[in-house]
Length: 452
Image (cartoon, rainbow, N blue to C red; front, top):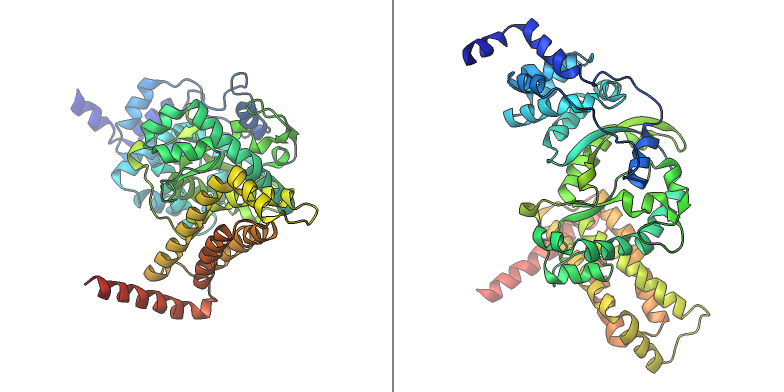
């Protein structure tokens, strides 16, 4: 019987019949309006909203489908939706056996999403590497993620900055505290240390005791830059209460996710669709990789959780929000341009900001070490230098100024100035990068000589 089944799949007509049977159960949909509204509703009211995904499938048909050799299954499924030709063949052929099988199994659910075939056809009209990269990342998605289609409405950059500032000052700290209060055991089981959990209880990103961040990010499920009305409309977050916040920053739209999944899967899939080319206010149907409903709050892979040195861009991320919060506290203290007397300033420092400041200092030291590492291995250059310097100009220098203006204890100011000088020494103009790298290498060689 097994041999007869196997032989049957050598017949193209029979393969197509099996594919049609698998796809027929609620899969053949046409693009429709309001997909973004439906997905947003499922985030903002997950218990009452209509589910985004999928009708029940004929499991028998899918079992038959997965028995087909993966490249044939992929070609049959995708060509049945009009996606065929050299570019798709090349993209499928570049996948290994495991990727091909995973994508074959996931493809029926993808084509249930309105407009998915049209999106992929649009991407395929570009260069080969775009469609190949996008298909490969879809195959690489970890369990617990799905592909959805939604409308991406570009938000003006100034509005996006307002959303980002609110996220750093209110939503991000509140989200960390919420996770620590409600998901502590899950966080421990995932591998976070006691120091990391204490950070989260205080509204800070999880790091180890040396300020080295764990490889996680907070992901906006609906993207900030393409959130449309969610990036303009405010309401009281039913989880946190308090003053209204942008809907895009509500807990229901946030997920603590593995950094590699965020950057290498979700952001890469987004990147192949040229989202930055969408004009402000314009809308385009896109597909996104998002956690399934049961993983919307946390999507952590225990075997991959670790605290380690990250590239400068990722390392600097954890220092930005805490620096801004301390800066705001200090600016409120000196709102009338009056620096408190030294003894009053020290009382304020010790009572209000010392633990957060010392932690934030560790984060900036971690960035300095990351910069040094990046210069040594040649990975830190070009746009990375500009972006990191922009972050330091926007967050580190204002914190340093606020500490001085508020007459904070000299030892605290000096410690911040020391790490600031160290960081800016690495952020040299591009033409001088080789010189900076050589100086770093020379320092390391001297250290080695002393040890030996």
